[in-house]
Length: 309
Ligand code: SF4
Image 1: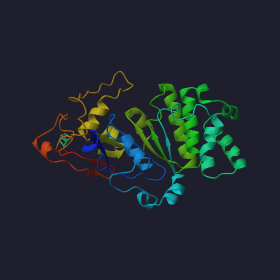
Image 2: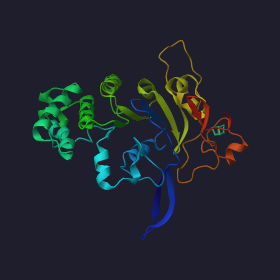
Image 3: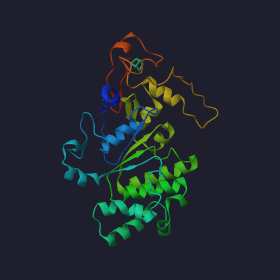
Image 4: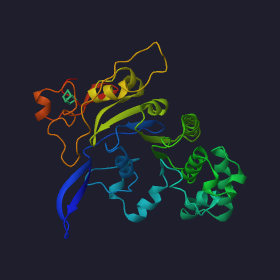
């Protein structure tokens, strides 16, 4: 859980809380990609930042290879950190404009104590892995296109051989043709280095392309989680169905019935009682307004949080 207090007034009395992540629980298996989708403000990026411990959870556990990250000391956490890295949406904002690319990729290697010779070799290796040359290392971030900058972001993330990569909207700022290049690069790297990904995106087509399993978030909760095939062919939660109905099908003969949701996503400081989706759900009944549904197993590979299912 992650609740952000909202304070008001000169002395900052506590007013209310935003429940950005409210009881989210999932597992990511080694070597797989878990996609996390939902509208902006649903808590998916906060979830990613919690896993990285860039934010401290209000409550809960983060278990990585049997270790509860929240119970580790600062020193233990520092050595654990090399196992997970983040790739951000806006590669330009995450690259220091005053540093050469080779210096940017070198930075995590310095922090983790690699010697000079090993660092130089590793930087060359990383540039090659992401499809850039040693000459690119001598340039500055502004000399690159968006796709190349994301390759640099990926090279930096891979520098210390992490096991888990949390990619937060890594292709959202890129043109469609470049998006597929970066997605294919991520897939190739996953195969080559046995990487595990948490792939966060609002774009269901992108998530379908890369994920083994997909979790759908709404107002800080996971409302459906399933393997990729079940989620896209047989979505069960009304919210998942509505999101998928908006995804264009690349076949002019196939028509999909569009489910238009009523209104906007509710204010997270004052979420609706019962099922938080009931204010927009076309199937809402009395029970939905009073009793929150729980995430239930409906088959080996699919979990849904809805009274109707
Ligand atoms: Fe809709 Fe009710 Fe299911 Fe919530 S529990 S998604 S309101 S049918």
